[in-house]
Length: 373
Ligand code: XIL
Image (cartoon, rainbow, N blue to C red; front, side, top):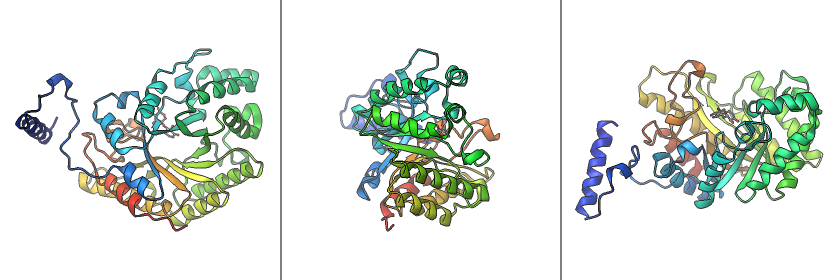
């Protein structure tokens, strides 16, 4: 704990004593929670007041421990929760004929108790498959495996999940038909996508069903091709009457790629909205480029990119929610050695759960971006 936090915590305890409030036992005081930051309107409120949007974050059982900073911050900021990994097939069914709902239920119960929505993430994802299911699909090509999974999981959370990412990351421009050559495609052909949507629709007819995709924000020819392929896929599904309701834009922004490409994003959103679909920003965060600058400069660069991105997308009525992929840099999936850097400041709160400029950028974009398209 740094000195400032210690001083603030001492002042907090002193002020409780002055008010003759019984002091909480030391062991009950959450380690990192700082109640003394000046109040600001919750992001969920900023989102709701403009175009009735939701603000959400990806969380998991470990970041939703009652009384922890993560728990309190999610409680205050979010109107929607996504499970960062607990709703994925390999977490729910790590072994054949065995379901493990502990983590998923924990997250869903948090949302239920506190009256928040959930995004169900995700049913079919090539990187979220348990090995046994991948093997079995390859051997038998039996749709029953997919059917049984969807019909077990989707009804369980039908009361709380308002959007399911039915298929995650189906686009790959190096694959035939610009579709990812995953096990589903190998076993069932392109039809796997619409069959999965029909299954999910049957399991929870009220739930909005989404395709969720990444790599759509920048001006490179590759991302241009990805945008085009995705629009074609959505158009194909809509024209076939498939119960698809929306598109999830992951929005993993990346400062190494330059600034987001406004024209490309406008075109994408205009076409998706034109198909009558809604859009959710589902996994917003920023991968940093330059870590040798001061923390302030790094945080400004991150916040500026987020502001640019949100100013573009929130111009569209079709965009109904913004979800960040975590709340604190402490728990970011980018704070790994994936690109050889241990730290990354791409989320709204720092590792000490202090608000950063990125949070202010989200708040300002959510409150100012009156949709005109
Ligand atoms: C990531 C999680 O953050 C990790 O904790 C997990 O190990 C792997 O998946 N796109 C997605 C998310 O759709 O599901 C991924 O989440 C990040 C990239």
